[in-house]
Length: 128
Image 1 (cartoon, rainbow, N blue to C red):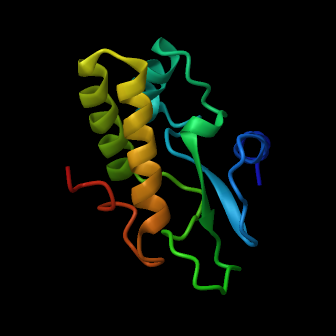
Image 2: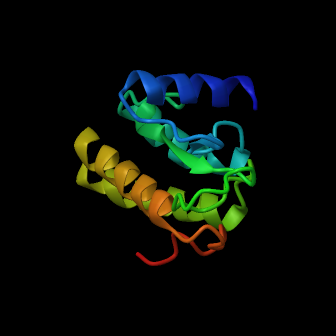
Image 3: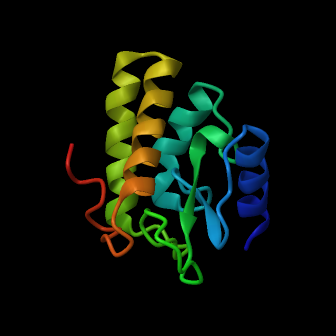
C-alpha cells in the first residue's frame, strides 16, 4: 500500500469510518493519474483534500473472504472510471457549491461500497 493510501486510510479512520478487515483505502479521485486532473482541480477549488476522508472509501481486497459488499479494490483507476468521476464532478461543480461536490463524492463512495464484488471498474459509474 502506498503512502497516500495510508494517509487516506488514516483520514477515513479519523473521520470515524470503520475499516473492515482486508480492505484498502480507495481514492475516488485518483491522486496521480494525469487523466484525473479535471477532478483534482475541482477538489482543489473547494478545498477538498485529495487524501482526505471525503475522497475515500474502504473497499475489499482479494484477501477479503467475508460477505462485505463493494467492488474489489485492485489499486488501479481505469480510464473509463476516471472519465466518469471527472464527468460526475463537473456536473456537481456546475451547481457551484462545495456541498454539491461533497454530495457527489459521497454518492460515488456509496456506489463503490455497495456494488457487487465482481462489478466492472470500467462501467461502475456509467449510470448517471
